[in-house]
Length: 209
Image (cartoon, rainbow, N blue to C red):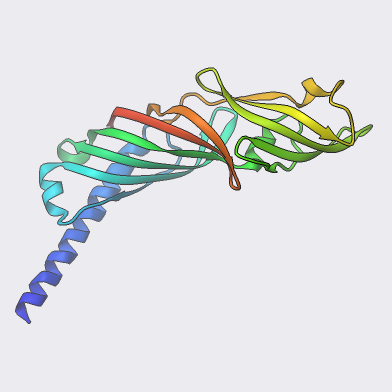
C-alpha cells in the first residue's frame, strides 16, 4: 500500500513538473510572433529527469488564429524535437519543427478579389466557389499553387455560367505568406476539407524573453 502511495505521489509530482515546463515554454514561444499563447505538450516519462537536464526530446505545439500579414492562419500544428532551455526557462532552442499551417476557406475569401465567394475543396490542389459579378454569375474552379518562396497563387481554371475570357484577371490573386512565427518556412501546400494546408518547417530556432 505504501509503495502504491509513493508511486502515486511520484506520478503527481512528475505531471506537475510537466505542466510547469509546458506553461513556461509556451509563454516564451508566444513572444516569437504568436498573438496568443500556443498549447505545448511535452512527451516522455519520467518527466522530472527532463526538467533537471533542461532537455525535452519530443514535444507538440498548437497555435490558433495566427495573424500573418493580410491572412489569418486558423491553426498551426508542429511536431517539435530537441527542445533545450536555459535556467529559468527564459531562453532556449527548438532543434526542429515540422508541421502544418491551415488557412480556412473563409479567410482565403477575405483576401480574394471576391470576398463573398464561399470556397470549398475540389481536389488536392483545387478549390471551387460561386461568384456573382452582377452582370454574370457562375461556379469557378481555381488551382492553388505555391509560387516563389512564400506566396500562394489562386488561379482560375474554368467557369460554368460565364466565360473566363474577360474576367480571368479579376479572379486571379496571390496571398503572401512570409514572416511566419518562429521563422518557420513554407515548403508546400495541399487543399483539404478544412482549407489550404501549408507544410512548414524550421530548425535551430532560438527563443528568448
